[in-house]
Length: 386
Image 1 (tube, helix red, strand yellow):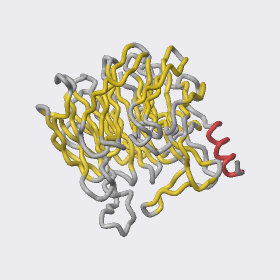
Image 2 (cartoon, rainbow, N blue to C red):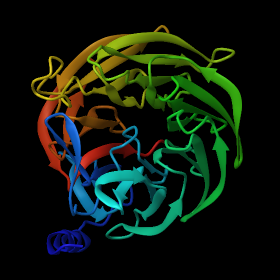
Image 3 (cartoon, rainbow, N blue to C red):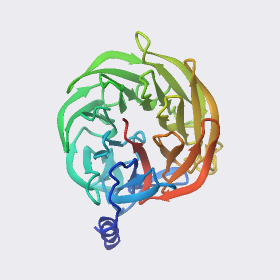
């Protein structure tokens, strides 16, 4: 570790943080320091500072940083590499990629899942667990008893049991082969079903969940090209999935899945622009926030380059998706999260290393001008699902 990297690490570990309020409403940004975007190309940073997670208090106006600590993570995979228990006591953070120990200019799949104690002051890593190669999207059920981690580099989903502060690996489910691109797993509110995106072979797999027993039902849905991020409404009525496409400049899509149909099925698809990554259903189940790269990750001389991403707000109405509003965001933007009242939306900007704060009133989407600086590129933003 270089002097610069060591100094950055020490600065993080001694960061003065406020005690988390007893009834806090928090968001977490997982921040990747290993890679940067250079004129449309991802480059590995030499001797990078440690990755971090930033704990943000959403009840404050404007939202403010409570703490920031070193935790390994990665921008590779959907911007859903952090999940929070419903009681906001623990966070699970995945690390899909790490620096290749044999070639510092490259990355290789990682398997780590960090368990973070959010009640400690400052928060601290309790333990590090092993998932599968390319551990990416992670979700915790609304009962706070089970977590699923999608392993992008081996076609599996790892299962973890949660009991208080103890998280234990209890199994692994094979979804597809190593090229199936298993990306994210999202629970239904009752915790009995999970949907798993597969961007490698354009499918969404349905899992059954019974306690800690998780099985592939062998039913797959087909939404669009490369389904990636997925979120389930708190009502349990539907799920929304972001189809990121092939990255060739074409307009990509978001699909709506009717979970109450027998059997469940894709019922609508809408065009949103180039590369929708982050996706989040509002707490009231009426809206879907979509983070669209919009060509902001392309080289500046590309005919598909745009000098900003965009946050697109969709409405779910009568089983269809309708575009209501959009607002400009940063470059190579990733995750999105709503406040509990649905009036604030957070967006993570990788290039700017900020979490952007926008307001939403059901009709108008507005940039508040508040941008929370984080130590690393914001690769994922998440709140607890209750």
